[in-house]
Image 1 (cartoon, rainbow, N blue to C red):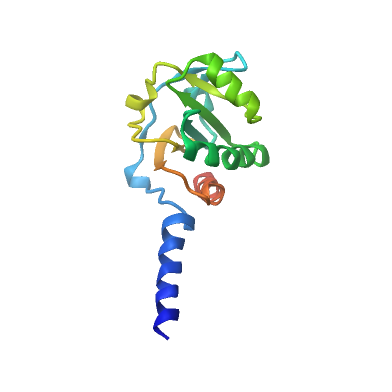
Image 2: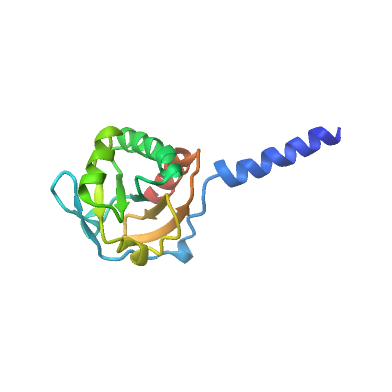
Length: 163
């Protein structure tokens, strides 16, 4: 009996930490910085031009092992949800390194931050970090660390922010 109770508690905690939708508190929203990034495709990504869309900025680096697990999940979400802007932003690496990694992993729409300015603009505390920006250009959430349920969280955030 106690074993079942303990299992239920562990399952509930795992659900709340890994799977349950992350908080998008409206009262904690604040304006996103006015940033622009070069991209591997050649056209710059200008965050201010994304108004009216939900934006997910996925900050990562090629040396980051949790990023290597997270990036395919994020890319899958991007392919299946063309109505949102999902932008993987490499932080602190030179273009040739990023280009080789992106090519090897089939990544699209990769933005570049070789001077790691995003660390200050978005208060990055580790990788991977997902920053969720609402259609009005406000940061609604910052999710740091690997989450195996990131696609579920992104879907929940998209539905909530489109209302």
